[in-house]
Image 1: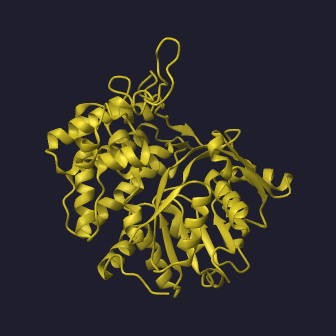
Image 2: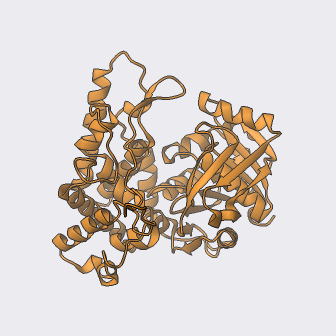
Image 3: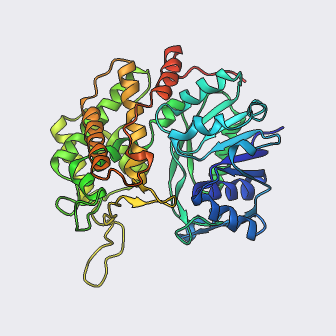
Length: 438
């Protein structure tokens, strides 16, 4: 069986639908999809049934025409424990903290046939976690990590259905595998090339996982007193993620913490014998560019060599330069598009009727706790990361106390993620980046 012939998508979110259409349209695969049965997924499964398993992807920008399309899902499973059949590839498109919980629900005889497990949007350490789990069930499957999902995809009508819209697409994504050479990586490179995304192959999956901008910017932007007051409804006025104080959280002190956290993550990455990222270059070249009048190529290329104060200054310039979209067309009043007006989302009642925390910072909590655990395991000090976690945990505990008796989701529980960290630590102990030949 060739690479990517029979692919099962685990997770029923917007990213799964986009990946299904991409694989079906560009790769001509047999596609299955599975998700847990919940209030949230019920409307997805209902819409799927009513359309005879047809799914649709729309696009916001005509440049991304190759991602648009529709296809029929060949197999639909309600609940992970119901999966049957022969699959060569699992595409994991669930939150990173749910990887093991999801795989544990799948029958071993199904899991043991799998040739490759692909992590669509993992975090630092996810591949090691999966490797440890697969070893424990005597599976020798290849595990591939993307640095991040290929873009920004959301529900077309704001609620789960069989239709999504992809509003943004990354220019570049990184990928790494436990196997070298890899037929699966080769296929993904071809697929991504067809839709205009540059896929850079890293030496190891761990290295690909370090190329996720969220690791570097979300904790400082969300795990601070200002943003947390907004998230938990203590601030009546609307506030914005990427704006300067008092419209948003960005101050010279937030920038200082962002830089310090990047240095701590770099120390962890380098102790694991990998190359860290040039933060300013990564932000500018791989995410959102700024005008050369604001940051020169010399500023960007040599960022890692500058003194701390100059690095902070350049990061501050980067964020002020993106208060507006510097490449948009000004209106008749000379105003550019208000690029930074991304509202900080507040806690909300989820579809199950529980108070819940928005994806940012809920998913960032798992990411940063895993980095902290890895840092402790390899004896690297990370005081800034410790502070972000302390600030966040103190806040969720305080909110849980003040709302005692109300229905609160698990997001309000302080977690250790001890089991995941034990598994990751065990793999790190065996040596990072070792590859199995095919």
